[in-house]
Amino acid sequence: MKTLLVDKKSGAPIRVKVGKYTFGENEKIIISGPCAVESYDIMINLCKELKALGVHMLRGGAFKPRTSPYDFQGLKHEGVKILSEMGKIYDMPIVTEVMDARDIEELLPHVDVLQVGSRNMYNYTLLKELGKVKKPILLKRGMSATLNEWLNAAEYIMSEGNENIILCERGIRTYETATRNTMDINAIAYIKENCRLPIIVDPSHGVGIRSLVPRVALGGIATGGDGIIIESHIMPDNALSDSKQTIDMDTLKTLIEKVKQLESIIY
Ligand code: PEP
Ligand code: MN
Image 1: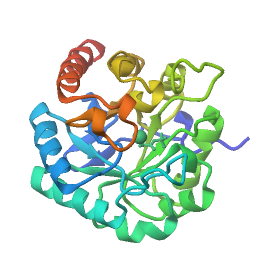
Image 2 (image 1 turned 90 degrees about the vertical axis):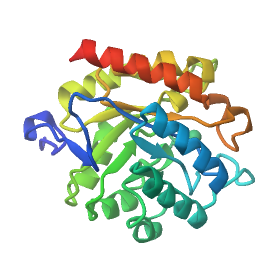
Image 3 (image 1 turned 30 degrees about the vertical axis):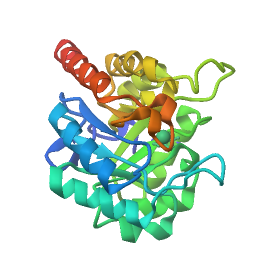
Image 4 (image 1 turned 60 degrees about the vertical axis):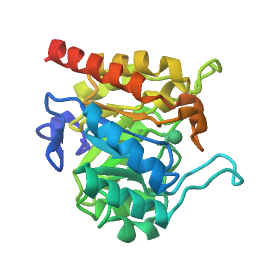
């Protein structure tokens, strides 16, 4: 069988640079922000807090893949504009999801990392198009994808020429229903040992319950995660999407302190 480009045997570990930050080095990268961009006012207040807490990058969905077509679908182009402004005002790189290859061109000048969501991990047309750009790609694991399928999704991007891929474990579907998904920390350890790409953890979607997010985040860092992506909001109860798993600023502050402590133990 052909050795994949993502495989450790194919070459040196890949470090992904986003602005002044690098995924895959000692520093654990903290990405946070709301599930969806909701308004300019909410974002400007939130970003001020995130910056003060030492969050490195800002996340926020403008194009939202919701389970129900009747739920809030995101601010779309207006959301991208708001994100772009926040990035400039607060000097924070922006991570946002791209759902459709036709939106890539519009997003490129405004965002720093293009996220492929769990539902699109198998969208090979989208993956190939993302292989033709130079911007880093945050590739989330499909909710029922095996590691082999996920790494092959990364291979689709890489084989088209873009090596700037950050994997993101966001929990998988199992028989368990008490939590939203099951965070597969095995996957993080496995990927660190067998794959050239950096990997971060998304405990928000991984566990789906606000109070459990910090513990699960730390588990992902302890098993080798290169960073975390966390949904946060000034008023989590009012968040228009994924409110139940969205944490407030105090919780985020304590979590970041603990990540820093863990970082100094691991390295
Ligand atoms: C998100 O990051 O808000 C999101 C939709 O994540 P996922 O694709 O992992 O469900
Ligand atoms: Mn979400």
